Length: 158
Image (cartoon, rainbow, N blue to C red; front, side, top):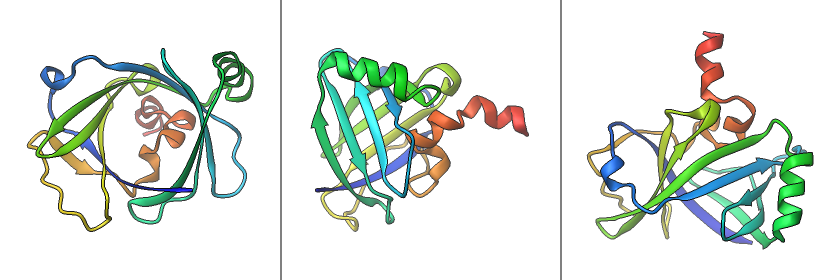
């Protein structure tokens, strides 16, 4: 199992000028048992099944397996019903780091999250001026949670 060390942040201002050549992503979540999350991800070029353990700070274990496109589509359609997130991911390199900027669609439209993978949980990370609040430890902003409780429902419930 590979160790994923990742920090996540809200984006606090318009950064469309940084967003070039995005990859459209559809990802769905299989029903959960225990602390692991099982995700099916489909892009134009790739289909994967990913198993992630519960986060401890910015760290968690992750396993990823390739899937055939037909199987991925079937899983998304039949097994992930109602637990799907759609977004476009952009890669932006700054200060020696590769930021993944996710611009969400559908019921999560308006949400923009930037994440960066680190080699060590204590690695120093210079934050660009467009970075807002850190959400690494806020489960409500995980893609899995956003698939079940999108941000559009947050304001409706308030």
